[in-house]
Amino acid sequence: MISKDMSEHLGRQIGAELYSEHLYNAMAAWAMAQDLPGLSHWMRLQAEEEHIHAMKLFHYILERDGEVVLPQIEAPETSWSNVQELLSSVAEHEKIITGLIYGLIDLAHQERDHSTTEFLQWYIAEQVEEEATANALIAKCKMLSEMPGGYYLLDQDLAGRQFSPELAAYLPNGAMFGKY
Image 1 (cartoon, rainbow, N blue to C red):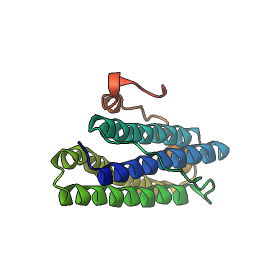
Image 2 (cartoon, rainbow, N blue to C red; image 1 turned 45 degrees about the vertical axis):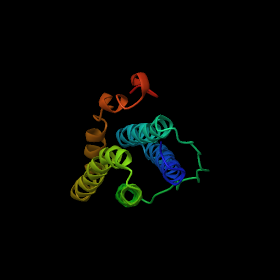
Image 3 (tube, rainbow, N blue to C red; image 1 turned 90 degrees about the horizontal axis):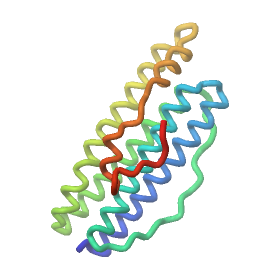
């Protein structure tokens, strides 16, 4: 059984993941308004991933006989001055999420909750990937922004992203919340 304190902290992380979903949906809407459908597509898939991250936590709490308490989710930012600013916001946001995951790991160690420590290892690996991806996109954006049509090339590249079905394996019965 999971402790009440750990259950509450994991519930807050569900809120952080759902906020991330809303943030990436807001970014997708902004990108569409800028006539960047590839970037919008990439952000929608990112939002989908964040939803799965939240649901993975949700089901873990229940599996450990904890109580899921969902926090209120704030409205995300909805406007950026350009693509590079948007991608910098992605990188900063992912750093915040990484810090929250590290805090959960610290609490799990403090409580000697080995199951939760093991469970959270997936999130640590995921955050390494998320931060690296955001940094790579920023580097591409900087490089292409100096070229005529550079954002068009970036948009075309981002349009090729596909949903990772491996993520669905973390949900009961492989359920997915959308198809891309």
